[in-house]
Length: 222
Image 1: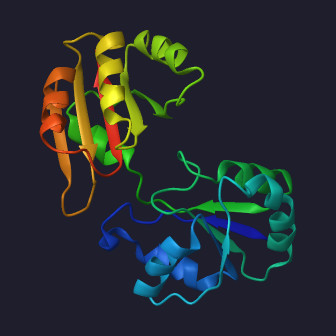
Image 2: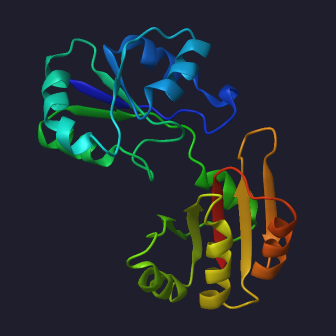
């Protein structure tokens, strides 16, 4: 049976790579990688010699049909990975998985690293039920999205880059109030991993003293 393996990769610490993920990447005929240069370091570290092909948000619509045909003809299937974490979670992957399902290709998704899970648990906020938004729209629709989020009575999880984290914290203060509770985690599983908890002003003060670096997970609670 034709098969696509969806394989999570470490979000920082390479020790988080699972034995099953390594074996799967060694087994398949091809690995679809978001950035072959970034993934090349990972494969080299684990002595995986399976050939890679580029598959990312800028070419997925163009390539998806052809890749599905190639998966159907493959002997050991294809694997899909991204630069870090689980494919399709704020990363490419959804389109290919959807198309494979439509074409009767088996999907096997391995459990593994996803940045928002440790950040959510580490926040200390209720996580039996939560709302995951991922990245907010950068421009069009951003204010509308904030208004929608402010009406949700659950723990909310967002992703943000270091270049827009200050903007996001100021917007959280505007839409959720100056006393809302926020937990900001960055560099999860890496050497300089950090979580800062408090009000928007407290966290803004923290990052005014040190430049924000790394990818951020922001957890909000009214």
